[in-house]
Image 1 (cartoon, rainbow, N blue to C red):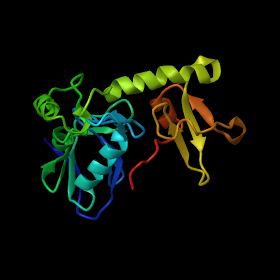
Image 2 (cartoon, rainbow, N blue to C red):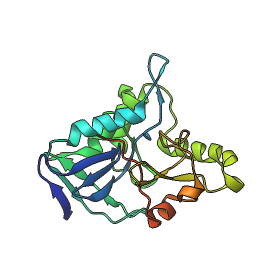
Image 3 (cartoon, rainbow, N blue to C red):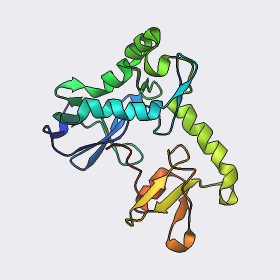
Length: 209
């Protein structure tokens, strides 16, 4: 495993969401896991829903902020993010997110964390308190539901320009998707995929602190 990037305690580490980090300006997608999306809610053991997407972000912040973070490189995904196993003060982040029930093992791509996921499910912690759609199903459902409200029934990603003139795209499962409006006269636009939005100069929202 070759080290790709590292950051000492207090340096530039930013939590994008429950499975994505920026370290010294480089974006890393954590290998082998899939955390709840920022706007996702999960069923709780008490029968009420809880904000599991925001919970995953808070958990990630507790793990990495103020710590020495190191990430390796295992190639890039379709969005140009580095696929990585990251550690904070020497403790593996990917594994802890699954172990604490704040992320699923992304078995479609890797079974590295399958045993940890099985143990978390047995303990009924985090996302395993009650039956909840995994993040990949949640994204698929949100995408399909959004198509009825977009031009020509396709390309549902909203390319918004905020008050600071930052170009930010919102996917259908984004926390602020419903309240984001597109004004074509301001240069805002619709995208059919995240990689198309990124190539055009838009970025994903930042949900962490």
